[in-house]
Image (tube, rainbow, N blue to C red; front, side, top):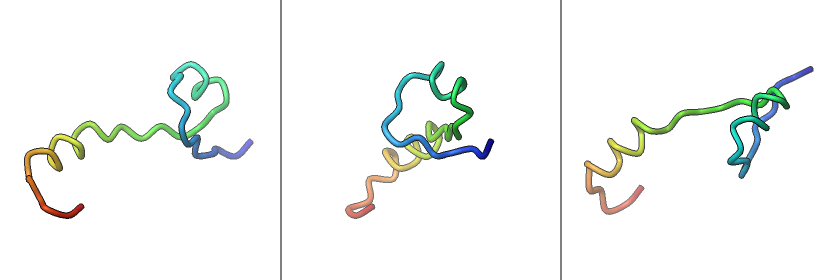
Length: 40
């Protein structure tokens, strides 16, 4: 079965059960927040 990108799924167990991609954007968000760019 091919992996899919689950948009809007917040239940980690469901992501695992349905073999979906999970992208941890924690570092990206921290960097973005610290940069104080006017436009993203």
